[in-house]
Length: 585
Image 1 (spheres, helix red, strand yellow):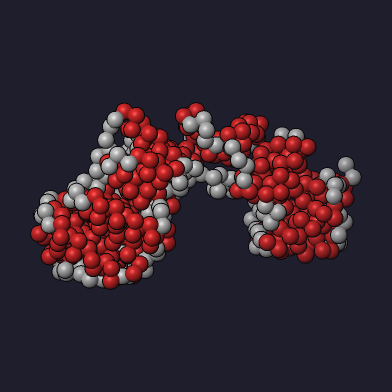
Image 2 (cartoon, one colour):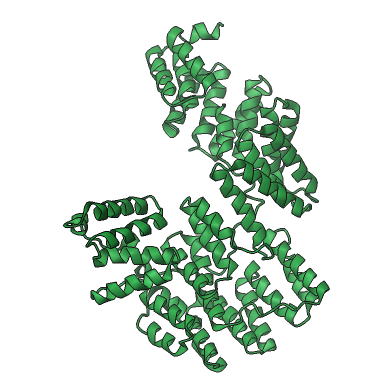
C-alpha cells in the first residue's frame, strides 16, 4: 500500500458535506474552573488508603475501575467502583465522589443522589450538588425549593443557569411576570443575552402571549443570528399561528442540512394533514431542560469534558424525549470512542424526529468504526434510498468503501453522489478527489487524473490533492517540473505532514536528486518515525548516497514496523542483496 493511499485512509471526505450534532450556536461562554468534575481536577487520597484492609475482590474492582477511568470508559469505571464499595469497606468520601460524578455522566441520577448524600453526611462537598438538587426539585414539581437551593452557590455553572432555572420554577407556580423578572438576571452577562431572549420567548409563548414571544424571538435573531435550533422553535411558533409560509422560509434556510430538510418535510406533512404542531417547550421541566441543553451545546463546541455530559444527562432526566440532548450525549461518547454506547443513544431518537437523519448518519460511521462495515454500508444505502435528492449518504458510503479498499464500489457511490448535486460548488472538490483516488486504485488513470485536476480547479491550494497528483505524475514520468512544484507547494502548506514530506523526498529520489532526497526523507522519518514505507524510502536514498550501513539500518527498521506483504518481500531482498541487485531485477 502506498504512503499516499495510507494518508488518504485517515481522512474523512464527507467532512465538508455531512452534518454534525445539533448546537444552538450562541456566543462562547467562559466557564469557571470551579465547576469542573472532581474526577478531572479534584484531589485524591493515595490509593493505599482506599484499598488498605479490604478484600482482594474489592481492591481488584477498585483498581479495575481506576484503569477504566484512565482509558475513558466511565461506564465500566462506575460499575467497578460500585462493586468495590459493595464488596469491601471502601466507601470513602473520595471514592464516593468518583462514583457520584460517574453516575451523573452516565445519567444514573438515583445512584448519583445516593452517593451525594453519603458525601455530604461525611461533611464533604461535591461539584454540581446544588444543580442536581435544583433539577430534582423541578422534576418533582417542588418549584419553591429551586430558588432556595440555587442561592447557595453563585459561581461557575450555577451563575449561568440559575436565572433560567428560577424563571421556569416561577412558570411552574403560574407566575409569568416573576419568571421574566428572574430571567432578567441573565442580562447582566452580555454573552447570555441571546439565551435570555430565547427563554423569554419560550416563557411568553407558554403563557399564550404570541406577540411578545415573537418579539423576543426576533431579538434572538438580532443578537445571535439564526441557528437551526432557533429556526425549529420560531418555526414551530409560526406553525401554531397558521403562518406556515414564514415557518417554511425558516426551514428552507437549512435545507442543505439533514435536520433542516427533515423539519421542512415534516412541517409540509403537518400542513397537508391539518395537524397542528404542539408546543415544543410545554412544561417547566421542558424549559429547564432547554437551558441545560443550550449550555451543554455551547460548551461542547469549546471542550469535551464531564460538564457536557452532566448537563445533557440532567436535561434528558427532566425531559426524556429531548432528542437534542441525546445527540449531545452521543457526540460526547464518540469523543471517548464509545461508539456502541453512542449508537445506543442514537437508536432512541424516533424516526419521525428531525434529528433522526443525522443520527443515523452518525450511526453508520460508528458501525464502521466498530468493524461492522456491512451494517454501515446497508444503513447508508437505506438512507440514500430514503432521500433520493441527498448526496451526503452516498459520499459517506464512498468513504466507507474506500477505507476498506472496495474501490470499484466507491467509484460508483461517488459518481451517484455527484449526479444528485444540482449545482457543483468549490466545496465539492473533496468528492472529485476521493473518486480520483478510487479510480487510481482501480487502474483507471485517465479518469483519476481528470478528477484530480477538477478538484484542483475548485481548490488550487489543497495540499492533499497537490501531493497526490504531483506524486503520481513523477511516478509516471509525466509533467515532472510541474509535479515537483506541486509537491513543494503542498509541503509549504503542510510542513509537518510526514506523508507529504515523504512524497517530496521520494519525488526527488525518482528524479535522481539523491542528496536532496535524503535530507527530505530524513525529515519525513522524523515526522513519521513508525511508518514502514517512509523508513524504506529513506533506506533507498541512503544507499544511493553511499551510506550503505545506515541504509540497512533503515530497511531493518522498516521491516519491524509491520509493512504489507509486498513491501516486506522487497525489504528482505534489499537486506540480503543490496539495493543495486534488487533494482537490476
